[in-house]
Image 1 (cartoon, rainbow, N blue to C red):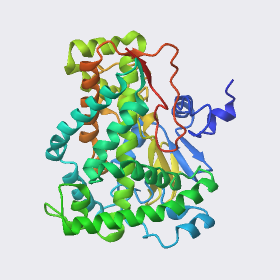
Image 2 (tube, rainbow, N blue to C red):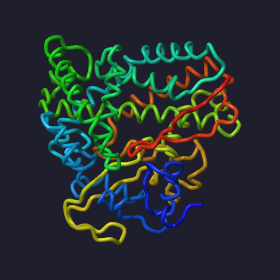
Image 3 (cartoon, helix red, strand yellow):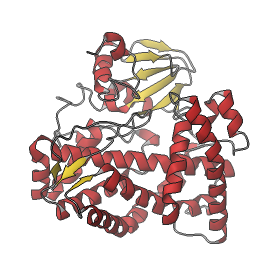
Image 4 (cartoon, rainbow, N blue to C red):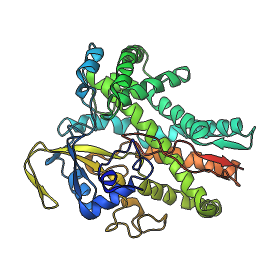
Amino acid sequence: MTSTADLHEFNPMVSPHREDPHLFYKWSRAESPLTFAPALNAYMVTRYDDIKTIVDDPDTYSSANAIPVMWTNPPEVLEVLGGLVPEASTVVNADEPAHAPLRHVLDHAFSGRRVRRLVPAMTTKANELVDAFLVGDTADLVGQYADPYVQLVVSLVFGIPPQDVDTVQAWTNDYMLLMNPLAPVDGKLEAARRLHDYQAYIDAMAADRRAAPQEDFMSDLVHGGDGFPPVSHGDLHYMFRGLRFAGHDTTRDLMTSTLLLLLDHDRTLWTEVQADRRRLPRVIEEALRRDAPHRGLMRVTTREVALNGTTLPAGTSLLLLFGSANRDETRFPDPDAADPDRPNVREHLAFGSGIHQCPGAQLARTEVRIAIETLLDRLPDLHLAPGYIPSHIASYFFRGLERLAVAW
């Protein structure tokens, strides 16, 4: 049984919130829409209107602390990190006027033209992965499909060669661990040691693109592009590392949560989409709303401000829980239900809002659509494996399935 204390002390790394964060979200929206979390030294914000107010007012609510940085780690971890390029700006943590030039780089990197150019590679990779697991009659669509598929696509965007994909993913996991304020110090020390190799890899890749530019994100960073100059050395490292992990986990988790939505409840939505593929984009949006793959981002007040009846002094940190906003009863009636036909299905905050709305949203939607269409074509009788019970990863940043067992 979940105690009141367990319910109110939100920690997505442990039970009961790892399995069901909506226990806390629902309580908080009703009883305590601004809940202080001592471990984060921040207020957690859970109502849709409050979060929308914050993200649409960047002058009052700065993004300077949007995601944790490595230099907030314990002293023993910082000692191991010594010698790394100091973290500079990333589009997620920047306010205006620094934000606009960095956003211009990303809008170019994730443009519709770049996304369309990747569609043939997405289709080929999806079919290769299906071919590989068709030798049996069951599969885990997290480990055998979504994860390698998204790794391939995000690596193509960044210019990472196929033989380096697994190594870069391991470094990306290390980087994510170092930014997790709830992770154990021992693990952080090991990750910090390995990050020096990651820095050397990024420097070598940047040098290669300076000599021989390609149609990829690294070339954009070192050469500039359509109306924007090259970024600084520090910006290059921070943007490459940060966006590499953001582009992988969120899309993988969106893909598998959409598939679970399609295959759950007697495959009702799977059957509907099989009959009319035009319904698939709305199902993807409903999956984004019901299970936002990114839990939330931080903001800090730039002045004293009243929010939902609470006066917050300047310098107050806020954690915006998008997953809660997306199930706010005042915005989405019957919020726990899966209803792709709800009229405001695209008003979710899974990709944020305002100037910081996710620049990779079009890429993510396209990746997921191509991957699911491939399964619809190749495995029309796909269904959840008998006895499968969904379980979610222990993650501070992301909400995603550990595995998705299916059969056909």
